Image 1 (cartoon, rainbow, N blue to C red):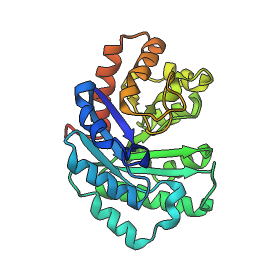
Image 2: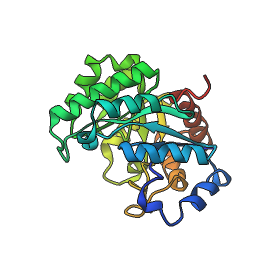
Image 3: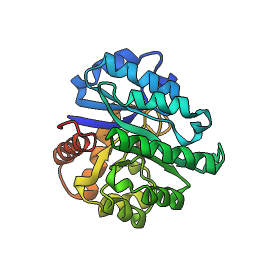
Length: 256
């Protein structure tokens, strides 16, 4: 079975067929999904999905571009939500300088606070970092994120940064981008990294793999990512599925 470690099934892109799609995933080889919060509202949506589907788990947190909504009261609420059944991580959190909003100091402030929340809750973190390589790594080292653990979601940097995060014990999230012709850096990372640090993800409804690029993504397209990993690593597709399943369970501590 395939483990989709990062999805957004509460997104409006799934409003017309969400229940039918999700209910059918196990029969089509998808054994577990972690739905990821990106704001207060999507965290609430995520918690609802974890109650409705036995194979769906949740991460609670606020995406860097949404941190303008945060305050101490909402942080207290997030802290309470970390104790909900089937909440397995704090995320997605981090820095995003592509949109550059809110301002960078605000993003950093709430990134640190949410890292501290994960530490207090004893949960791993799901890290979002876009066009913010240096600052993300600096914050994580200052906060000793290696003691917290987690995954760098949709890893998009080169081998040098991959080495930094792998040395900190982090997993790297690999998805549809690996199938893109212009994904040279990511293919180099996939070749370099050990299999026991790789997890599969969709980030659906975004980042569909070839041949569905530009269309709505879903966990059902992950076999295309499995095939790409298999070719790069020189192992069977069955081996990719088995190892990344075990890695997903280890990342989210589902066997503890």
